[in-house]
Length: 352
Ligand code: NAD
Ligand code: DAU
Image: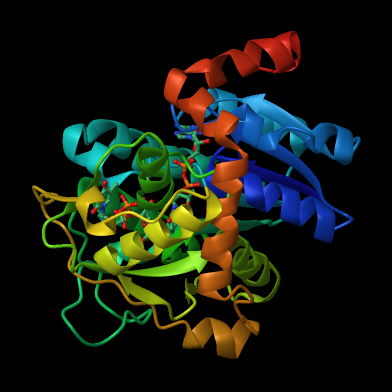
């Protein structure tokens, strides 16, 4: 089965490609990724050698219709797993238009290419989405699939628009589209702008850890492998036109998470205990900062048999260990050296 995975050079996509190639022997994966600042080919290192003949990388922009149609014609995928996106909320505050282009136009371009390519023989389109489309919760309650869409940031509004397009293509054209909406991911290969790897890199560099507002905002966390197992289940057991929330029932206040990280880092790096609180700096809040997220994953549990496997404390400790052991990976991102990897390793082999 030919599978097109967009955004495969980001954290979730690259972990998905490893997991899916290992666990789905009949799959051949074509990664389509524009290699924006967030795309890092080092995240996919070793995959070509590890799974010979079952992997191809194509550098392309999902909003580029001729490029996307060419890939559909060459590869004839029967499944699209759409991860590619501008994913960072703070960047969407600084510059919303990249988010509209990639997340809205890019998704529409893929859906339309799929509609045209799958006229004779239908395939499945898995739209990877986010709990942020539901907006913010107060102190109680959780997001269900029927919770009204109420996005706060240009990022979440662009993801909500993409979801609406996927559902519209299902209703209007009968396209077999399934949507997953997941909570905050953590794990290896996460770009060090996201809370956990950002705080780790700042700590190692002896910098203050900037916590937005009063640090009482709540996020709901899931290990990236558990998210990806949920995506696989939605692909194989999900019903067309349905939305499945994915989460591990693991809410943490930001400030508590930062304190846990500090403790783990002190242990992992063998640094003498210091006054932890002095490393934390409360800074100006993010505009439109959603107060609390909490996913109710019961539909995925009931219909897909979804069961997250990684306990948070264990997953977090392993993740901290990974960033400590792979300092070169995030130093290369910080310095920009990861950009050279494209030329050095792939050279002329990367199709444009
Ligand atoms: P990421 O920022 O780590 O990676 C995004 C990838 O998409 C990069 O490789 C980038 O090069 C690629 N990309 C960006 N624009 C592109 C374009 N126009 N054409 C082709 N490729 C492009 O993101 P992530 O955290 O891995 O998120 C993947 C998906 O999962 C996104 O759709 C995101 O909305 C969703 N999601 C993320 C989280 C999370 O906590 N990170 C949670 C729920 C859902
Ligand atoms: O909920 C799913 C979403 O989670 C995904 O759809 C997004 O792609 C992903 O980026 C993530 O969004 P968040 O905004 O929740 O993640 P971020 O890592 O940017 O921030 C997590 C929380 O930590 C948030 O409440 C803001 C806060 N924060 C973040 C940073 C970077 C800080 O307090 N300080 C910081 O320096």
